[in-house]
Length: 118
Image (cartoon, rainbow, N blue to C red; front, side):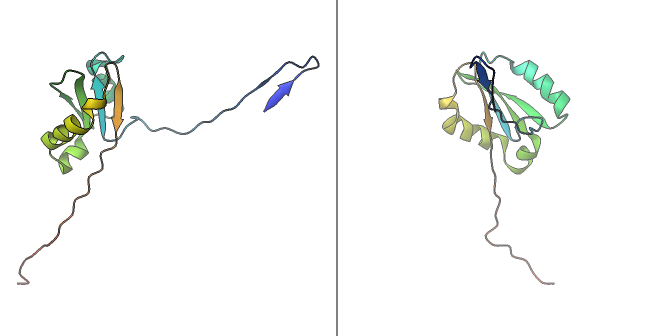
């Protein structure tokens, strides 16, 4: 939309908007050291937005301080395995002060289920 007046001055506005959900992530949030909100502040905030929805896990890493992990995800996939994958595939790309949102899709499959018909 462009609006102008007699002397040729005007302005242009371009705008987008979308609905968001709270909390703003579903699976994992990686908190780097020196992130603006901080581990304790974000943990308290998540406790208000999604009570009993996430676990705060402190991490031994030079850049990453902690992760918030969905309890539903932990029911499907071992926490230690999640940490191992993040340490290898994500943590090397995290910088001080960052907060990283991760979509961690788990697909469980069974190749063969056997049993008796009795």
